[in-house]
Image (tube, rainbow, N blue to C red; front, side, top):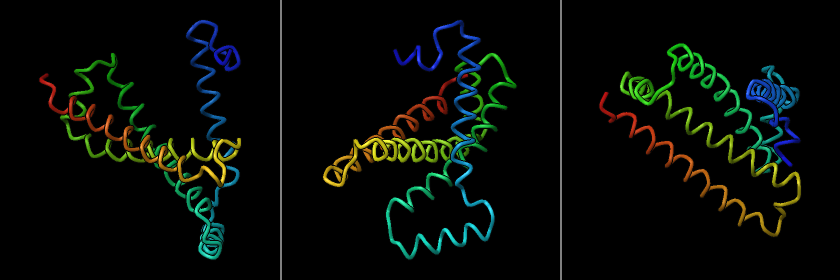
Amino acid sequence: RMVELIGCTGPPSSWRSTRAYTLSLHYALPVCTMPFTPGGLTVYLRHAREMRHQGTWEWLLQVATAIVVLVLASIHMYEALSTLPITAEQSALREQGGWTPFYMVLLVCGGIHLTLGLFRVGIKFGYVTQANRAKWQRRTYILLAAYIALGIITTLRFHYLAV
């Protein structure tokens, strides 16, 4: 049913346009609430310090990681798609060519953005309540650790792959 709702029932070419639309929407909607001007950011930071609310700081971290992921993922896509076809050997050459620090930053920022986003969606739709917040935070940290561990293992595998 979910596949039908997001429009992934047609040929793969329609999936690509659906994914592009979804990613564009995922970027465009939150960007309206981001404090991009220096004055807006200053006011936001002052309010965050005064309120001392964890959710406010989480949102700011979500915004910061979103910007980093947007820039780094664009660079990654350009680099990966400019050396088609995408193969394990191409990925290994990229890792062995000095891209490891770049991918480590992308991995950590992507993981933080993903887990914070899932946690905030859980709050929004009522899965995370004040009574079970600590349990869900622990689960979020475990998910983040697993995501980063899997990414490091994959990166190391490509780094030491003989090509």
